[in-house]
Image (cartoon, rainbow, N blue to C red):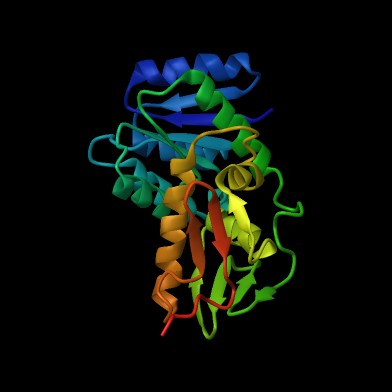
Length: 239
């Protein structure tokens, strides 16, 4: 049985989520205190954590970073639950190692769908989505053992989500990959209109590539109204 831990300083939200997820057959624990919540994560090693952002002196970002830096629980899937919806807030969450992001107020059915998708995805670590060996196309090399990408001769660390997005784009190099396809391949959503999730991750991925590449933002193209396309040799400037 999968155990889900909820950390939110709003008791009513904790109980609402707990009741609904237990009806789905999950074991649910919760804490309204982020410090005690983190201690529970280390003790219980849950299958997934649902984490609020604004919780007094210790933010959800802080807890997410602690999870990612703790050996036994570093790969625990995290859904961030928050009233903050600005792009910068989402980028900060993903930079902290969060896997998915839901903005309050939320529909409980949406949360349940995200939980199922993320649990399914986290159980596919050895599936075909994850590259088994170093993959090189054009200027770009993916190193699966370390979740790193190299552009020509410089490297940077990626999150598992960023790695999987780049992997899907590389497997379809030169062709457009729709946002819905990325949501299905990376997150496991069958049908979903959460294009903003993809947009935020692509923005963050581009930012990392930008720091190690002389061709600023010239590897991943946005196909407006469609999706994204990877050009592995970079887009040459027109003279």
